Length: 296
Picture 1 (spheres, rainbow, N blue to C red):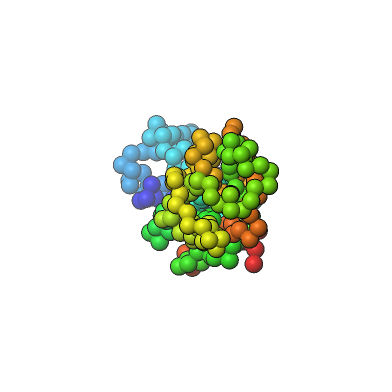
Picture 2: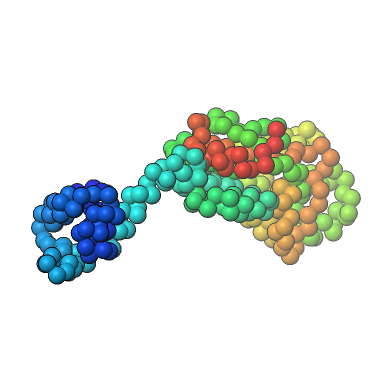
């Protein structure tokens, strides 16, 4: 359709509907000879007759009938382009690629995404679960628009625009047998002496260091006995009695036999969920930023 301009397309569709040159010219506000001349040019471009004309009637040829629907759809799309461009420029249309760490799904994130989608039906949300290191790579490569990551309290991610969206404490996930052995109120030194399962440092360096720094502050040098990239996998390891794990409080929604959650010791680090993005923010990214309940 690239060789047919919208004005010519509109003329043909009006003619196909009216099947009368005089009425078509009146609807278009054209003179009748201009209608005839434009149709002849279109037929010459197509190389076939689109209308059969006689003194008694006008009707579509097979070629004209075949052209009618595709041309109407093309014209609808062409006429919608300015509105689409304005919507995209204002962030109301387009695609938003969101990276997120797995624990985010246990907190208020599903509700945020649902309300954003309801408020912005023209925006396609594309979700990708990824650890902090992968999100940073994807954002810098332009393969992701925003990310949601976990950091220790007061330690925003560096190198990208960021805003805190949620805060929560750590909790300890303990194997049931360990919990029974230590009792309801274990001594801190006994608790910190238990085997530890932890996520690798490379996927969340600040959060990893915050946990180990707490151990060191209590005079304990600990080496994790098992590591797992996903927080949910840490819970599975706890269930298998490999050791205890430090997880965000929202992960308590993940209930599993053999796992008991307990508050973290006093003075332990807390978690914060941060939204990260590249500046300058695209319009659709700014819409997402404005929609989330950002915290100062």
